[in-house]
Image (cartoon, rainbow, N blue to C red; front, top):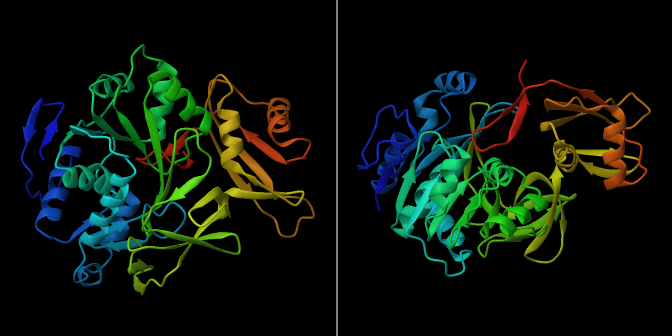
Length: 381
């Protein structure tokens, strides 16, 4: 396989970089380490707080024998966690994903994501490496540019829900024949995936995963039920998802201390089990409000409100007050040219959820921050 730099219109070598800065350099360096079994610490160096935190950790703490990667989470919900992965983890994960392609053959992979986390490296890098096909990469993609690349037959696109939504908005008069899109774990509403398939003729596989667990499950197009990969076993404990698989990390760094991980690994995701291999994701425990005895997913409400014209993005945070006698309150942060009002919000909630009274407060004219894979991570202060 080779790396093609779309910006420079040339192929580049897979070599070691001491301080990779661009996407092409990050990819070349990561694949060189994967080829030669070189241990690598991976994190988003564009996040100053994360970079400063990791600089405080001793090199002896970071290094671990027989490991390929040490991925650091962004720490948006607390202290960053360091997650160790072996080369075998990456290899088995690639093989599990490739099985879901159901015989589709690809000549190349086009990826829009940076190579500073497990999604970019394992899916955008290791998967095409194991398929022995070229990776086409560009520093910054516009939706129109991605549409141009996706028109070329037998292309696998590794991207995020943001690009799927953007392509739905521009509605290019083209078809993506024999092209498959992979998206990360940031939510992609079923109606967006359905509209994409109907307009462009290409399917979207939405992967559900975490840094600690690796790939867990997937769904295609407008499916609402997730299917666990063949090598993954799922179970439930107090409504939370538990995962057992050879992809789960054996060791992490929490608050400067190494910890061993036991199976099954319990996540913060609330689920409904359908059968041995299938489940429905209700949301993360931090994103589920309990209103009138019913669980309400803030992701579902965000999706509803984001369909209002003039609303670009919505982020909802749950405000809990154990001393209060009323239900939890939703703080609704709105980005866009349209200022949401209470009447509009109540009307949308009633359509989807019935007559449940949901306490909320609206914050208009906000700037919502996102991670490199499109997850909403906070509000610009």
